[in-house]
Image 1 (cartoon, rainbow, N blue to C red):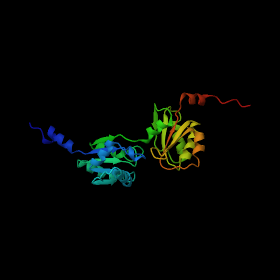
Image 2 (image 1 turned 90 degrees about the vertical axis):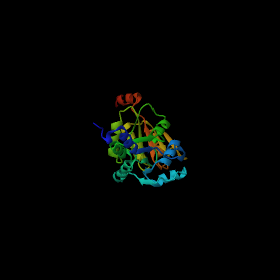
Image 3 (image 1 turned 60 degrees about the vertical axis):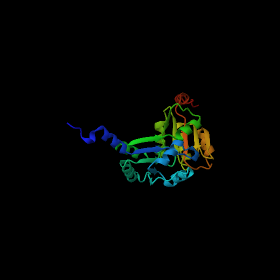
Length: 258
């Protein structure tokens, strides 16, 4: 009995060779010099490049004199289904497709999660190229315990939902890392103070850029320090977890009233 051609080892190897690869490429979060040599090489080699914002990516390509790939397409939160189907089609044709966000790792609080799952389900290969990432950088610069941490992305925009969100994290021992916009940073810190108490925290602005600055202190002091100060770009916040000292303080009975 002969083995069907589609099932022979040679046929399987040929089919695998024809499968495309999705490559997630971490890109600079501010300083363009932070692109790795490996990422630069892959950006030169991919058949197609899917970008959160093609204008931002063109700036990066121009900085490194990287020729635009023959296929450059937008992939963002408003077109994930349509652009995702196009990416799958390119992979089905055996092409390599790079995926980049505006900065950092695609899929970390940026578009990418859905296409990664679709690519896995379709049986294609995935590679991730390491590079810049705001959460671990902010954690290390904060001076807060880095042994364990929770990254929660962007908190809810409305105060009530944001306070419930923070309440769910209030008794966890891990350092808490969040992203926030300049328009809501003060409201976030006020809600954090109300829910978590006056914990240590750090607020990181413009990381890796020329005007990078880090504010460290307890939440009440940070609110006063940041209020009215210029704020721009994406902000990363690190808040102290519930450690033994804070736990003892929270369990201490209030002083008797006279």
